[in-house]
Length: 394
Image 1 (cartoon, rainbow, N blue to C red):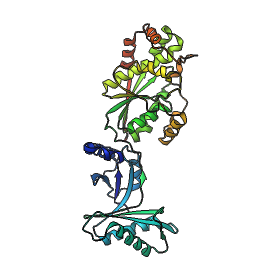
Image 2: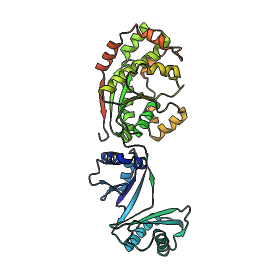
Image 3: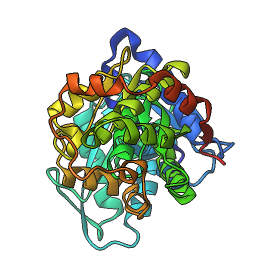
Image 4: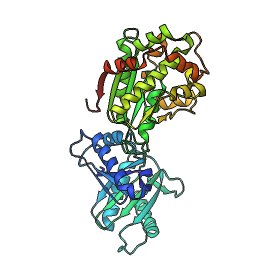
């Protein structure tokens, strides 16, 4: 029944002179998402983006597009030839389809006269078209202009008419990639996949670094990371994952440094390695799933010590003020929660100290690192990494 989808892009519309750049990026992202639908065409006009279905199933297309960042809402619409009588026929077609299995409903017609040559003004059109609906479907409707069951929008244009009733919510945000690329430290837990989602929503492509301690951690733990990345693909597009073995570093820390500093020292190595990889892959920032006070290394003092290991790039922590329940709620919404709670050991639990330092002093940390060959350990870890690329259509 439907001919097009109307895509509203919300925040993109306030970008002033940069608006075409944002719109073009959003169109490319929509086209990428709809790669498998060869007959679909995406075009822009009148401050909107239009997806021309050309016979494709609108439900399938909506399911894909609603997860594209930058899309605020979607309306499946009927397009008719120009003219007022054709507009009425389009309304009849829409109403008949929407109400054929329904009992008595309330409705409202919101008419828009975009062709100013037409003698009737928009309010007059709304009244007239409402009367037409009541006359055509006398047993189905009564008018409710405040809270109708069916809110029909009818646009009279010079070259065509557009009629729609539904407004399906999208994820919003900014088009993926408009703000460059960020490098997420992706663990197998609940938090970091949510952090990746949130930063992708603010316009970043995502590169990922995952740390493991094979053979102390199993290969299944790495497979879990691939499953998490696969779950994120509808939002992030594609993800390249750098699998880095941290075992040599952890063993060196265990042999040469105070036990209570194991967690924070390991974390500093992770940040330093991630920054090297991020710089190599042209990322603009690091991203972590840290939340204030959630674990021993995520106190203010711990985060200060962690940040000190990063020399150039900003570190974004989108979950820093989130309660755990809020993070879990969002993880369930984006379908990463069930994968995250699969029990697998990660590198942070392999050498977990009995009493990790919660308020580590930076001076003490730097002193402990004097016992380590930092450059050699970092270079060995980076050189031995394995890179895996996840693509949406594989």
